[in-house]
Length: 85
Image (cartoon, rainbow, N blue to C red):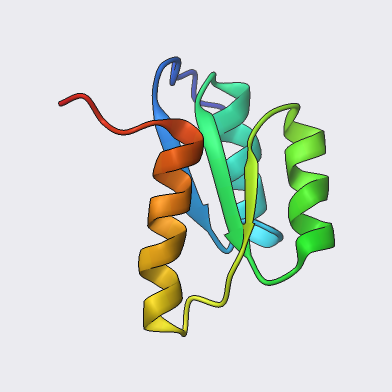
């Protein structure tokens, strides 16, 4: 089964994006036209996701650290742009 969706002009932040479901979500979102930022602990795996997607930003972070979560959101906004809503 496949779902056709157009995410052109949308921004997607995927936490846990270096492997498994997160990686698949990031690749699918990029394939549907979204700007993506992937977050995880493995810089090497995150870089591979961005290269495979052909676009995106990788942020190395451990989301069990509350202060780091605030920082990574700010980094993602810088990378993908703020919402205009």
